Length: 175
Image (cartoon, rainbow, N blue to C red; front, side, top):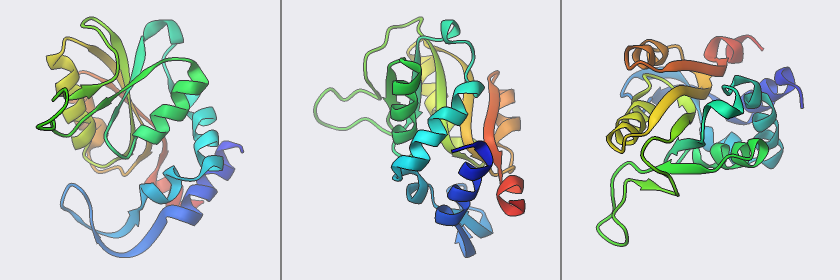
């Protein structure tokens, strides 16, 4: 599936119009239901193909990172495609088991790229960035599938990381 076909597929299954509240708490007339496209094998496969060119050179990072829960399926399929392991950055540690904020193997000094689904203000990706930095992991890029164009890129740049996204809401609205 080429990039334009992927955009149309995402829009057809996940772009909803109505009255919604975003994760950032803003009212909006449209919503992109990430679970509706992140659970489709054909879309996930095409996402991996189309996200590969947005990654830095494979020699420039050790693993991918995904904030739970939405971006995990995308990071998993991209991990297989680029042959790089990935970690899951939790929203909060559990009171049982390992009680870690990061699941998966990593070491301080690792270089990672954060994969995100929808970038609105960048809040989830920036929280993941903070957790990774606390563990002395270097993050060079935050790559999203869709940039809602509501401040995420500016917030990510302010945090010293390079933002990019496969699509924007402008792309979705005009396809």
